[in-house]
Length: 264
Image 1 (cartoon, helix red, strand yellow):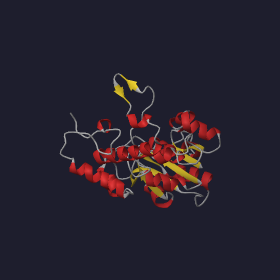
Image 2 (cartoon, helix red, strand yellow; image 1 turned 60 degrees about the vertical axis):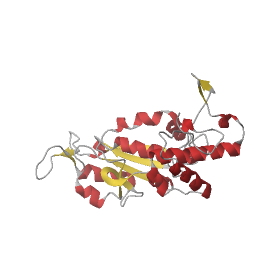
Image 3 (cartoon, rainbow, N blue to C red; image 1 turned 60 degrees about the horizontal axis):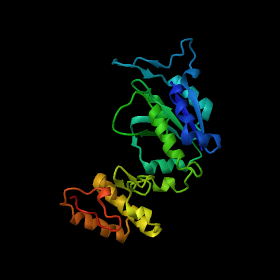
Image 4 (cartoon, rainbow, N blue to C red; image 1 turned 135 degrees about the vertical axis):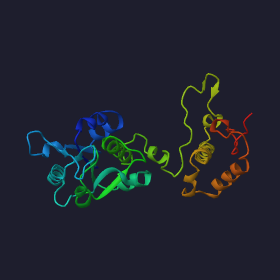
């Protein structure tokens, strides 16, 4: 999959691509990230890419000319792939959108900055707008990296574990179950016995119930859209019946039982 990133600050993007999973994905040819400096498409000696807003007001606005030149030079007229503006006015990003984007062979990301971009870019060049949350950042570079990272991990072969993306929080509609590694006991805290049992069917059920429990505790809104089995619903019903208990946390669950333990 190819990502084209249009930005005023390319050095903010490149370092993140040179580490860990994304670095290996790029080296293996599974992902391409091309960074385009919008200032390279300005025409004055000062490489001016912003100006004061018409009508007054503070801050600067990104000019339309260099953005149009950059995008059309790289993507063609009209753009050969979706051009996504990273903006707090866009649709709120989630795992469903990540899966949607992962089906495309190429996407372009436009990073706003300062007070934003000239509205004509939004009206006549951009094909989609995405926000990564209800807050405001200095620029679109961090949201662009969020999209590149979250979409890339859905591309077959990018993760070392072929089921890694399936087990992630939100991938199944639930938060992820608790994870443990060696040592089996640390400062008196033991890994749940079920994970050491070798009983893969029981482990799978325990993990499912822990994911349900954690989601019910922390993000109950997700349960409204999650795909639930009859066994899942029965487990959630037991949680509701026990909701008067003082605490329900994953490490207080009996590793051999489907019911959480009351805090003592």
